[in-house]
Length: 582
Image 1 (cartoon, rainbow, N blue to C red):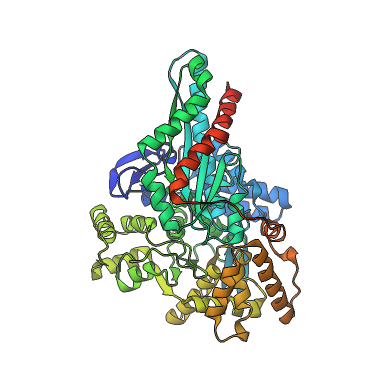
Image 2 (image 1 turned 180 degrees about the horizontal axis):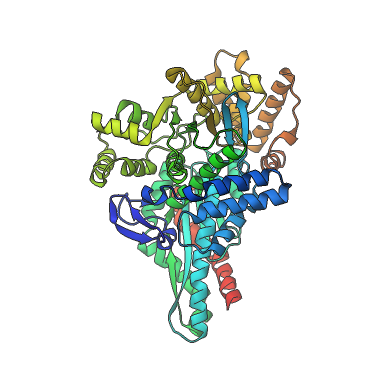
């Protein structure tokens, strides 16, 4: 049976997984595509032992053999989601994981006794979004290409007015969504994407990871905040705009349209990184992490552990809940927060309100802008009944305070089995510094937030003996300002001022090099050898071979630049792709 997707607030109206996949978002207000949690319950229970033994077998093999066996495990996990993809298509999606930089895909390393890091950053953009978002782009391309192949075959048999479908999405990203997702769609058929990102908020490395995308992907650096870019993207993505995109492609394919009587159809949605397919990708690699921990004898099968995640992204938390269902696990999950603390207010205080300011929060481990808490909606849809979830969301977007009853707070705590821990960003920096001195291991601010949250949880619960699996979400080398600041922790009484000063340097290549010089000096101070080779290759190339500046756009330029990109580059490429199938 193939799973169908609902939209939040309307579970009775189910849609094809494929249909939803090629639509960036449903059209009805704040409703979102939603996989009903029941569809994942115990989905791999009958194969759990077999998958664990496969991973054990992989551990004894060389790189190539190990990689292939691990891919087999991912094929089984993805197939268990009942998406409707054939076995060959699932293999094709997983095969696109070829670029991963670790033979275990997501290795687990020991931090200290009973505490283990689930390293989610061994990918080309050195961040946890890579593994799931690349699956999304592969899925979209596979579905559209499959539909177009059928249309072309019918058209060649002179069945008139077959539909050729193309997906043109616009992405608003605060940091990593652009490069993590769309770097995987370069050269793929019948899809294209334009990314808008806030030039002042992104780091130099993140900017160049986006600016180096090409072919069917274009990134636009914009002179405003993520929230303003998001608003513009949604506001101007009208039916008239979509029709203009459609006509642009139809004009480029005019001779083929006239010869084969094609009709051109465009799905031109506003893509956001929070979607059910990304949740699916994240779910299966969390499930894989649990199986891998058993295969490596880190935990015993069915042993209760503590899972710890930083709340930079709501979907990360939601995927952990889904992985629990998939693997039939029910252990506590600690979600750590800082000033971006809406989740803490929901779980621990039972009330929250939409913030008055939409300014960017520039603390080290904040990534999710809380004006658009999309997965919050899914969380409430999971915990409560449909009508109540809608009431909560409507209250939130009316700028009113949401207050939970005691019964609802108990439902949230007991059903979700989540504990929220709040840390200050200064505590994060201190934790990075402390972990480095204890283990000589570099961790990013998000990971430090999770480590500190676990320490507080253990102190509060006196639960020191359970094993803990901590999500390590990014390479520390993506956060040069934070890394340089915490290495100076013992030398200043004003770490806040120092971090802010270093943060100003993080946006340019020239000053990124200066930060690396500071980091090298601090390494020497602690008796550690510094070499550029310890920086992941992708980031090392960016920092060493720094580039000149780029053009800056306004949010209202998003639509015109998308059309120009389509006319000059994408539409001709689409024509070549259609011709190659004919």
